[in-house]
Amino acid sequence: DEPGPEDGTDPRDWHRKPWDAPKQAGRKARQLCGQVAEALHAAVGECADPAVQALTVVRVEPAPHTGRLRVRVAAADRLAAEAALARAAGFLRSEVAAEVCRRHAPELLFELL
Image (cartoon, rainbow, N blue to C red; front, side, top):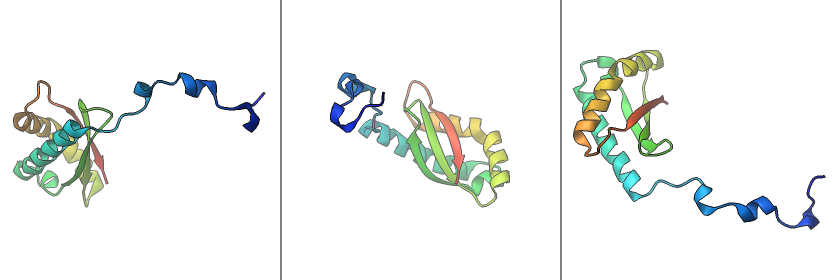
């Protein structure tokens, strides 16, 4: 049967561990996202493709950790922006790797707004 209000709490809640809960981005993750956003702003301006130069980096956030970052980008022409980002993804990641001191460059997932 289904538990009712008089049955008390769910025993699964009692066994749930605090480290199983989704984590918020810490100070270092926010710092990395800020550095990546600055590097992407510069790299977008240096790119030879005018469709990439027309993009605006709105926000960078961990997805779900700092090894993979979600980059939210604003663009006027969505189809041209998707194709341009697919072509320039390697260049943008290499520019981020050159600017940010980490052992491994984070993977960039672009999301158009």
